[in-house]
Length: 193
Image (cartoon, rainbow, N blue to C red; front, side, top):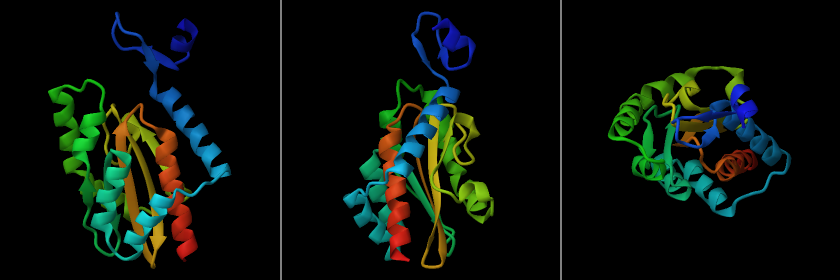
């Protein structure tokens, strides 16, 4: 365990606490899960059905249903509307491990700036954001920059409209489940075109 700590894979947050994976370790894990799922795509039927809401222009309903399906905070922004829809802040707070009032406050303040950051990200033509779902753990996220939050997002072309979807959860969330959702959405929108 000492070697894993020294090389940056584990950290001990409190002297009497156990060791937990670092952002570096979680990023490696998330990357491997994403790569595995991309190589063996599997459609999630209930998510394909959710994709129809977007195709019909029901972004707000889609974001709400996505949040309910994942039990996380979800957000969506369409280029033709530039109004961010969010749902599930309560879901996010409910799944976090022992957060303090200060952590709730910091995250809530960060969510308040989400519309501006999502708009900037959607307008950014960075090639790095175009090849499937992206994951950011902790403060590296371009959307919610909190050390206890993981961000997964993707940008899609739907009906000649760019749409950004994001979901936010605790650092130690079910990466496999969330990547399956985003990859299913990507395939559903490709099949629609």
